[in-house]
Image 1 (cartoon, rainbow, N blue to C red):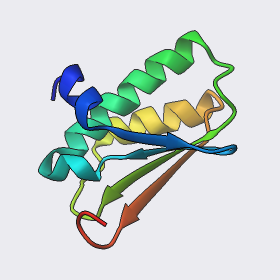
Image 2 (cartoon, one colour):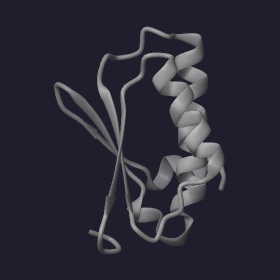
Image 3 (cartoon, rainbow, N blue to C red):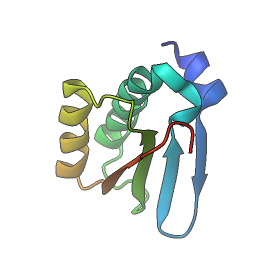
Image 4 (cartoon, rainbow, N blue to C red):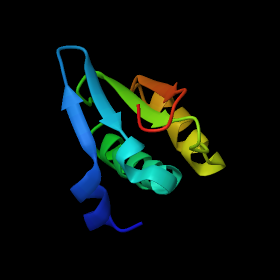
Length: 94
C-alpha cells in the first residue's frame, strides 16, 4: 500500500467529537490501509501530543484483520492520550 493510494481512497469525516475514518473502500486491502494510516497518525501524535481532542473512529468490515502492528500502534496512541474506537461492520461494504 502506497501513501498516494491511501490518500486517494481514504474516507475521512468529522463532527464535534469524532474523526471517522472508513477503510471499507479498500476492500481486501483494508488491513494494509489501516496499518499505514494508524502508523502515520502515531507519528503525528508523537510530534504533537496535544492532538485534536477528538476520538479517532476507525471503521472496517469483518473481513479485515487487525494486524499485530496496528494493535500495538493503537495501544500506543491511547497511551499518548489519543482516544481511539474501532468499529467493524458485519457486512462487507456497509
